Length: 194
Image 1 (tube, helix red, strand yellow):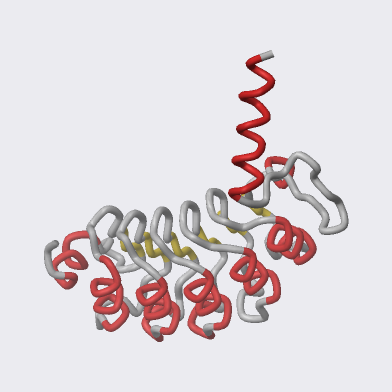
Image 2 (tube, one colour):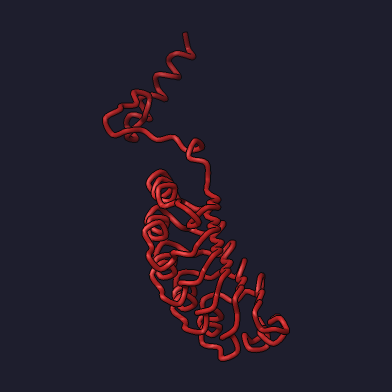
Protein backbone atom coordinates (compact mmCIF):
# COMPACT_ATOMS: atom_id res chain seq x y z
CA UNK A 1 0.00 0.00 0.00
CA UNK A 2 1.23 3.47 -0.88
CA UNK A 3 1.33 6.05 1.88
CA UNK A 4 -2.02 7.60 2.73
CA UNK A 5 -0.70 11.10 2.04
CA UNK A 6 0.46 9.99 -1.42
CA UNK A 7 -2.97 8.46 -2.12
CA UNK A 8 -4.68 11.67 -1.04
CA UNK A 9 -2.53 13.68 -3.47
CA UNK A 10 -3.30 11.18 -6.25
CA UNK A 11 -7.06 10.85 -5.75
CA UNK A 12 -8.33 14.07 -4.16
CA UNK A 13 -10.33 16.09 -6.69
CA UNK A 14 -9.02 19.50 -7.79
CA UNK A 15 -11.64 21.31 -5.74
CA UNK A 16 -10.63 19.11 -2.75
CA UNK A 17 -14.24 18.00 -2.18
CA UNK A 18 -14.18 14.40 -3.45
CA UNK A 19 -11.83 11.63 -2.36
CA UNK A 20 -12.21 8.10 -3.71
CA UNK A 21 -9.78 5.62 -2.17
CA UNK A 22 -11.64 2.46 -3.21
CA UNK A 23 -9.61 -0.76 -3.33
CA UNK A 24 -6.45 0.70 -1.79
CA UNK A 25 -6.09 -1.87 1.04
CA UNK A 26 -6.05 0.87 3.65
CA UNK A 27 -7.22 -1.24 6.57
CA UNK A 28 -7.74 0.36 9.97
CA UNK A 29 -4.23 1.80 10.08
CA UNK A 30 -4.82 3.70 6.83
CA UNK A 31 -8.27 4.87 7.95
CA UNK A 32 -6.85 6.21 11.22
CA UNK A 33 -4.10 8.03 9.30
CA UNK A 34 -6.69 9.40 6.87
CA UNK A 35 -8.80 10.70 9.76
CA UNK A 36 -5.82 12.77 10.95
CA UNK A 37 -4.90 14.24 7.55
CA UNK A 38 -4.75 18.02 7.27
CA UNK A 39 -5.76 18.01 3.59
CA UNK A 40 -9.37 16.89 3.95
CA UNK A 41 -11.28 19.72 5.63
CA UNK A 42 -13.23 20.50 2.43
CA UNK A 43 -14.14 16.89 1.55
CA UNK A 44 -17.88 16.37 1.09
CA UNK A 45 -17.76 12.90 -0.53
CA UNK A 46 -15.51 10.15 0.82
CA UNK A 47 -15.41 6.69 -0.76
CA UNK A 48 -13.51 3.96 1.08
CA UNK A 49 -14.99 0.89 -0.60
CA UNK A 50 -13.25 -2.49 -0.32
CA UNK A 51 -10.47 -1.48 2.04
CA UNK A 52 -10.79 -4.05 4.84
CA UNK A 53 -11.76 -1.32 7.31
CA UNK A 54 -13.30 -2.53 10.57
CA UNK A 55 -14.82 -0.73 13.54
CA UNK A 56 -11.50 0.85 14.56
CA UNK A 57 -11.15 2.63 11.21
CA UNK A 58 -14.84 3.56 11.00
CA UNK A 59 -14.73 5.05 14.50
CA UNK A 60 -11.64 7.11 13.60
CA UNK A 61 -13.34 8.46 10.45
CA UNK A 62 -16.62 9.11 12.28
CA UNK A 63 -14.97 11.03 15.11
CA UNK A 64 -12.62 13.06 12.95
CA UNK A 65 -13.42 16.76 12.91
CA UNK A 66 -11.82 16.85 9.45
CA UNK A 67 -15.04 15.38 8.03
CA UNK A 68 -17.60 17.89 9.38
CA UNK A 69 -18.56 18.85 5.79
CA UNK A 70 -19.04 15.25 4.70
CA UNK A 71 -22.32 14.69 2.83
CA UNK A 72 -21.60 11.22 1.38
CA UNK A 73 -19.72 8.41 3.09
CA UNK A 74 -19.19 5.12 1.28
CA UNK A 75 -17.91 2.13 3.27
CA UNK A 76 -19.06 -0.48 0.71
CA UNK A 77 -17.53 -3.94 1.18
CA UNK A 78 -15.60 -3.50 4.41
CA UNK A 79 -15.88 -5.36 7.75
CA UNK A 80 -17.64 -2.74 9.86
CA UNK A 81 -20.02 -3.99 12.53
CA UNK A 82 -22.36 -2.39 15.06
CA UNK A 83 -19.69 -0.49 17.04
CA UNK A 84 -18.47 1.34 13.95
CA UNK A 85 -22.02 2.14 12.87
CA UNK A 86 -22.91 3.43 16.34
CA UNK A 87 -19.92 5.80 16.17
CA UNK A 88 -21.20 7.15 12.84
CA UNK A 89 -24.73 7.48 14.24
CA UNK A 90 -23.55 9.37 17.34
CA UNK A 91 -20.74 11.56 16.00
CA UNK A 92 -21.40 15.30 15.62
CA UNK A 93 -18.88 15.25 12.75
CA UNK A 94 -21.34 13.14 10.72
CA UNK A 95 -24.30 15.50 11.17
CA UNK A 96 -24.30 16.64 7.52
CA UNK A 97 -24.43 13.13 6.03
CA UNK A 98 -27.14 12.71 3.41
CA UNK A 99 -25.90 9.41 1.95
CA UNK A 100 -24.37 6.49 3.85
CA UNK A 101 -23.34 3.30 2.08
CA UNK A 102 -22.65 0.31 4.32
CA UNK A 103 -23.44 -2.37 1.71
CA UNK A 104 -21.68 -5.67 2.37
CA UNK A 105 -20.39 -5.13 5.90
CA UNK A 106 -21.15 -6.92 9.18
CA UNK A 107 -23.89 -4.63 10.51
CA UNK A 108 -26.58 -6.31 12.62
CA UNK A 109 -29.82 -5.12 14.22
CA UNK A 110 -28.06 -3.07 16.89
CA UNK A 111 -26.30 -0.93 14.30
CA UNK A 112 -29.45 -0.47 12.23
CA UNK A 113 -31.36 0.60 15.34
CA UNK A 114 -28.60 3.09 16.20
CA UNK A 115 -29.06 4.70 12.78
CA UNK A 116 -32.85 4.65 13.13
CA UNK A 117 -32.71 6.35 16.53
CA UNK A 118 -29.88 8.76 15.70
CA UNK A 119 -30.49 12.42 16.41
CA UNK A 120 -27.19 13.26 14.69
CA UNK A 121 -28.11 11.77 11.32
CA UNK A 122 -31.21 13.92 10.89
CA UNK A 123 -30.26 14.82 7.28
CA UNK A 124 -29.64 11.22 6.17
CA UNK A 125 -31.76 10.49 3.08
CA UNK A 126 -30.00 7.54 1.42
CA UNK A 127 -29.01 4.46 3.39
CA UNK A 128 -27.58 1.31 1.82
CA UNK A 129 -27.54 -1.63 4.25
CA UNK A 130 -28.09 -4.52 1.85
CA UNK A 131 -25.96 -7.66 2.35
CA UNK A 132 -25.35 -7.15 6.03
CA UNK A 133 -26.69 -9.10 9.01
CA UNK A 134 -29.63 -6.80 9.70
CA UNK A 135 -32.78 -8.77 10.40
CA UNK A 136 -36.32 -8.16 11.58
CA UNK A 137 -35.74 -5.76 14.50
CA UNK A 138 -33.30 -3.59 12.60
CA UNK A 139 -35.34 -3.49 9.40
CA UNK A 140 -38.51 -2.62 11.29
CA UNK A 141 -36.73 0.13 13.28
CA UNK A 142 -35.45 1.72 10.06
CA UNK A 143 -38.85 1.46 8.38
CA UNK A 144 -40.45 3.17 11.40
CA UNK A 145 -37.81 5.92 11.43
CA UNK A 146 -38.51 6.72 7.79
CA UNK A 147 -40.34 10.03 7.59
CA UNK A 148 -40.43 13.17 5.49
CA UNK A 149 -37.02 13.59 3.94
CA UNK A 150 -35.17 11.42 6.48
CA UNK A 151 -34.30 7.90 5.31
CA UNK A 152 -36.54 8.28 2.29
CA UNK A 153 -34.29 6.00 0.21
CA UNK A 154 -33.70 2.82 2.22
CA UNK A 155 -31.90 -0.06 0.57
CA UNK A 156 -32.30 -3.11 2.82
CA UNK A 157 -32.55 -6.84 2.46
CA UNK A 158 -36.14 -7.97 1.89
CA UNK A 159 -37.70 -9.02 5.18
CA UNK A 160 -39.59 -11.75 3.31
CA UNK A 161 -36.28 -13.45 2.52
CA UNK A 162 -35.88 -14.41 6.17
CA UNK A 163 -37.81 -17.07 8.03
CA UNK A 164 -38.82 -16.10 11.53
CA UNK A 165 -40.29 -18.42 14.08
CA UNK A 166 -42.01 -17.08 17.16
CA UNK A 167 -40.76 -18.51 20.44
CA UNK A 168 -44.19 -19.95 21.21
CA UNK A 169 -44.30 -21.85 17.91
CA UNK A 170 -42.70 -25.26 17.93
CA UNK A 171 -41.07 -26.89 14.98
CA UNK A 172 -41.64 -30.61 15.36
CA UNK A 173 -39.16 -31.39 12.59
CA UNK A 174 -36.28 -29.48 14.18
CA UNK A 175 -33.32 -31.48 15.47
CA UNK A 176 -32.00 -30.09 18.76
CA UNK A 177 -29.13 -32.43 19.66
CA UNK A 178 -26.63 -34.93 18.29
CA UNK A 179 -28.61 -37.76 19.89
CA UNK A 180 -31.75 -36.72 17.99
CA UNK A 181 -29.75 -36.51 14.76
CA UNK A 182 -28.33 -39.99 15.30
CA UNK A 183 -31.75 -41.42 16.14
CA UNK A 184 -33.26 -39.82 13.03
CA UNK A 185 -30.47 -41.25 10.87
CA UNK A 186 -31.08 -44.73 12.27
CA UNK A 187 -34.84 -44.33 11.62
CA UNK A 188 -34.13 -43.37 8.02
CA UNK A 189 -31.86 -46.37 7.56
CA UNK A 190 -34.56 -48.67 8.98
CA UNK A 191 -37.13 -47.13 6.62
CA UNK A 192 -34.81 -47.76 3.67
CA UNK A 193 -34.45 -51.45 4.62
CA UNK A 194 -38.23 -52.00 4.39
